[in-house]
Image (cartoon, rainbow, N blue to C red; front, side):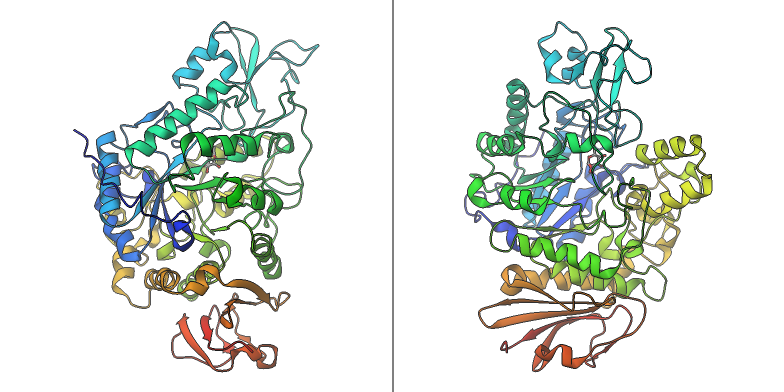
Length: 578
Ligand code: GLC
């Protein structure tokens, strides 16, 4: 029997309630395992809701728990309206929704509708060329003049994000189907109105079940030029040569507006956030313009792609100077200052851990750098996202063998690169830096066996540093990253300037300091952060603003000099703006 959900403020919540909210992302596989099979599950999440409540977050975004062959850990869905047995049952999900709502936390589902699993009944039917479902996917004959299966016979030159061509030959019919991700993730054809109708009906079913919104997986891929032109290499980014031809397609905004209307997303005050790896500021501004009723916010990739060598793949990394990072975030702040809304993130299940990547995960600086990164991000204007373990300052995995990795992207990259002659050591170094499994090691609950994540054998190794980095220790320590995040979240809830103050970047070229103001109606906050592992003297003359200020939050409470320690940061309030 499923537990009916508690209706939670649907009627009364303001349309833009998410402006004051902080979202916490749970990657269910790695959060908490309740039954000892080594894989996290829904009852595990429900049992740990107190952690989220203590942190003070408003929304839980649940990465996919739908039925799936798990080729891409659940981002390959074979039944949108059921829970995979590895995660539990629909009744367990209802219980999680009820548990969240009882604590004042809303629940947002992951919506993966650019593609399904190849085991979804729609695709299984579509394999038959005479089926009405044939046109639900992108089936195409080989390139003219090429026999099926011969080199170069793929209908376009598009590459899969997970290496190799984006087309898979079906021997039975001699036709290829499109899969921008793995061959087990065939792309849906959104040109077909029946596909769109089926997706909207499924979304309404979830809304009726009590969910409070959707995080939309690679939503900027759903529309494409039906002529399927060969691709052009886009500058930067980790999307391959194909993607200039498939990102931000001609009907994207039409589909988003239609979805919003048909599902009642805006009308129901549901949270919508689109993952848009190819979004420009201009597109984000249009898509998140409330008057257009498309999406509430988008995830940009520009700041997390800064370490990609221009024209390279995600594995070809270059150092990111602080001024470039500051400028990227500032450009989005300015671009969406008057219309639209930002989402703010350092981490998710696809990105390496921020404290390793942008901070300093050495024992000396880990805590301060995790806090300072949190401060800088949460004090920008937009809705912040916290990815599980970020609030503990969890670090990259430090894996040293390909056998440690589980992610399809990492495994395929390793196979392809080593086959092409790249030294194994180079490949492993790239994986240790950028591999998605860095984000997916199990949540570190305590110092006990397997960090309290499971009583069985974890599906992915637990980080050895869980003996010191774990939730139990962090919750008990007033100076922990956890308690700093808690204070940051409380500050957003209490201080209107954190939500709405206008953003202005100061000292844009400073190589160590990240300084900005948030101001409105003669009042201002100043964020002063040393984003480096060396001390940074601040020239008081450069910041006359700081006179007569009150410190609201600091990594090193009690210090007020302007010679900042490594990774020291402060949020100060100016009582009157000069
Ligand atoms: C998104 C997801 C990622 C997944 C991909 C394909 O980028 O965040 O985990 O592999 O889409 O669904």
